[in-house]
Amino acid sequence: MKTLTKRLTTLALALMMLMMLAGAQANEAIFGDAGWDSMKFHNAVAMLVAQEAYGLSTSEISGSTAITYNALKTGDIHVYTETWTDNIAPYPEDVSAGKVIELGVNYADNIQGLYVPRYVIEGDESRGIAPMAPDLKSVSDLKDYALIFQDPEDPRKGRIYGAISGWMIDDVMRKKVAYYGLDAMYNYMDPGSDPALAAAIVGAYEKGEPIVAYYWEPAWITGKYDLVLLEDAPYEPEAFLRGETECPSIPLTVAVNPGFYEANPEFCEFLSNYYSSSALTSQALAYISDNDASYEEAARWFLTAHDEMIDDWLAEDKAALVRAALQ
Amino acid sequence: MENWLTEFPEAFSVDIRTPIDNAIEYMVVHWSGFFDKISDGLRLVLLRVRMAVDLVPWWLLILFVFGLTLLLTRKPARALLYAGMLFFIGMIGLWHMMYATLTIIITSVIIALLLGFPLGVLVSFSNRASKLVRPLLDTMQTMPSFVYLIPAVMLLGLGNVPAVVATVIYAMPPIVRMTSHGIRHVDKEVVEAAQSFGSTRLQLPVKVLIPQAMPTIMTDVNQTIMMAISMVVTCSMIGATGLGAEVLLGINRLESGRGFAAGIALVIVAIVIDRLTQGAVREEGHSHAEA
Image 1 (tube, chains in turn yellow, brown):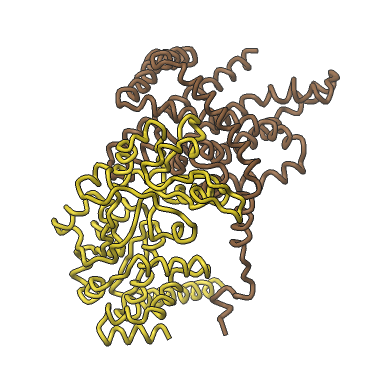
Image 2 (image 1 turned 45 degrees about the horizontal axis):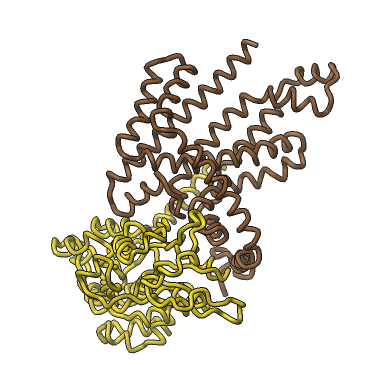
């Protein structure tokens, strides 16, 4: 009995070793997920291509922007498909010092700023909501409506839900609030984290309550809910940093770890060809939200619906491999 | 044909995500009046506690900690150490943030005690209640907090209010458990003696059981406070102010110094409160033994 147990254990161990050997591949691409949906979607697309066309095994590591970006430098993460360059203060230096390699721009037509739900301005008859701030168009108009956006913890003032602390845009938004003199009548609230900010907006929207919050496009929130971007002065580089103008579109780049770049030149060539747009990304995110789809399913749908992208990104032989995998 | 041996059969798949989503959405829309009331109530308590905390100037708090430590331990060196540690929080510029954090901790602990203590007493007298409550307490303690933090934000808004709710959920179980444990483990002889002297159904718990269980219960007030402190950073992710927000800012900006400074301040707060409440428990034990 005892020997049988022993033999079985040995056999099981041997089998496991075999499986591990078979499973272990020389080349792996680890993607960084800094926590928002558009990046997860682009990761899914790039991972699909990596597996099907380049035979790489792939995985994804999640974390905050700061932590995943640091991991990109140290090599624990290899690929960043959507680097919000302006929100990562050390990024330009790191690129010029060669600590990360910038391969190209994924898309550069994104928007960020202060948003309010459309019903705040126009009302919503179907939900029985009367307009609360009919003349609210621009950021400076917020002056007249502080008590509409009342801060529950400080009822004499309004509340602006700000950007996430640590993002560069947070500094700009704080300065913007001061520049327009809104700080006298509004508290600028640090939401603590991206999901908390999203939850605050969704909660207010579902209840039909007024809210003014920092957010950005493309994102599922701005795709799913009818939010209006408050107007601001036209963009100027210097003045923007002082919070005086609207936000520019940030180039969202594809960046890789230098070691990975040397080891996988072919795959990196694909990444440097990789591009999309705000509209395309929104489409994919809407697909996920409408169909309760996984990111991988969205990637497959996207590559099928936008077949032409495959030719733009990949050489003929690789493109054929991807198309075969989509069948 | 899927392989039933290696893959869990699809035939048994159940969707619990959609019903939960729908339930939360329903509550957000239809129960907003109820949650607004809770939110307003908690905000009022928070405000009062904050006012009380702000009444204490920095030197008075340090003196108080010094005096209390001296009283409890009779060791001047230790009293000086704790006072010095608190002074250090002021030196690194985090005194006000500590007050914000203390406000959340005190409010949460008070609410946890107000809810947990009666529940613990109830559970100690009824086996059925005990069977019902135990799995609930286990869930409260092990469910990852972010899971309920996000619905809490949708229902209660962002800031210190949902932070208190989350902290109470996490910090309440030990007080329920230990109150019930303490009461159940009071010496049988003591209970019999009380009964033979003719104590009524109300006198037994109020005059005998609860006082006898007090040392156990006090230990768990200490545990509840410690658990509330451990939630500080998590709660800053839903907009709670104070030391936790400072730690988070340090992490988000990759400023390790800032993170550590606030982290050290939190450690000091935890150590001082822990030693003081433990000292109080021992003191309580002594006076009992002497009596």
